[in-house]
Length: 315
Image (cartoon, rainbow, N blue to C red; front, side, top):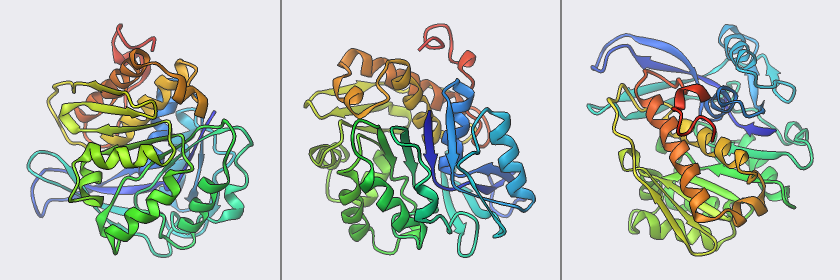
């Protein structure tokens, strides 16, 4: 079981890639998307985050249940569902603005996070909720700091500049939490935002040195690279597809990676460290395939395992 921690929200996305068009509501949020992706791939998952009792919140909960994701740890709140307004550029790449204050995602508290079962793998995806958000950010920092032993703790910083006041200060805050993780997945774009004076891989190697068994850097159409604590580097190419948009692509990659690691018995801190480069390459290829399929669809709509193709469906 992987416990996915963070927000569930509604994306208000353009119906057409042009300014001034109508917006349509899509269920989303980075942690929510990861949980749905894991469920579709057949990996047991639970969602831990605030779900509103409003109409959007009920839809979010119903979809998680339909995808086989446990809601046993999810909290319910009367606060309205968090909203994100999605902007797509000419290449279908998404950026986000958030309506966060006083909404369902912002109120995650430490006492709710104590419900995480001992020994469970935990994935924290940031986004609208950052490590600075009050009170949720402090609760997430405490969760990351208190989990030790062999349970895998993975993190996606998922940097959203619209909700971060000081990016250099936030990078330092992230570094302190990354030292408590076993695995970090981060995009090259996020690394560029956090460390504009460093090449992405050089910045990622700083994180590897702080403690995780691996830092996986996604590079959009150019694939992904895993930088391992052993010093090895594993790279796989991207898959060329016709892109509808990139909404949820990074989250799909994360769910594909966690699924693939679990299939290889590496859903633990020691498992991540002991996985050999060949197995890492296979896991990365699975994650790239999951993300590529998602890019061919509008919105965050990750594939099911059977859609991965005969070469990867069993992985």
